[in-house]
Image 1 (cartoon, rainbow, N blue to C red):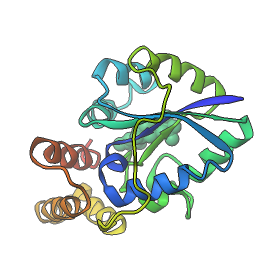
Image 2: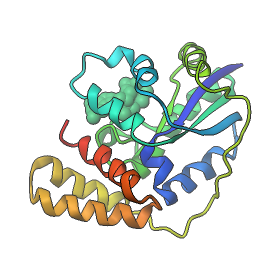
Image 3: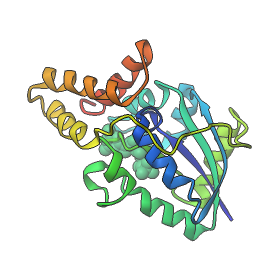
Image 4: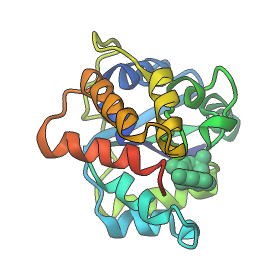
Length: 207
Ligand code: GDP
């Protein structure tokens, strides 16, 4: 049996219809079993260690900001190695413009590295990541109660198009304003937390 670390990244944790859609998939537990799921605000040193192998990449500072800007949902799963492979297939490729049509990332990701979920890519990385995260939280029980439906809209495809304009510097200010308006409709964050969500999403397209 393999174990894997799962993280609803800030975009999936706080865009409520997206969170509900992903949770509906996850809770089918078709070839895996959810052993833990809890809210947690990761500190920068943990995210830096987790993504140590990406330190030299130009988007690394953004990635650390993205993963530490807001509380996220962190979980532990168990699956046969083939089940974990199936989950990664259903998740889709890392970069949204390369993600397989019908995959979770193609369906819900906004673009760049804003790609909804982290899921360990092998049993070995699952063991390593869970050991690392367990120094910060127990990962022993399902504490988070998530609805499987949301009355909030899902603006993924509109956000993707606007984010691409924003990244290309085409009507960038207007695109940013419109992105903020749509994210406000999708989430229930306010104040500093809403500002953090918009900062980490917009930052993906300029880093
Ligand atoms: P994963 O296992 O599919 O999450 O992919 P990796 O382990 O290679 O990358 C970790 C995370 O870094 C990704 O999920 C993205 O959030 C981010 N990332 C990877 N490549 C890029 C990139 O080219 N641009 C940006 N902005 N983020 C990236």
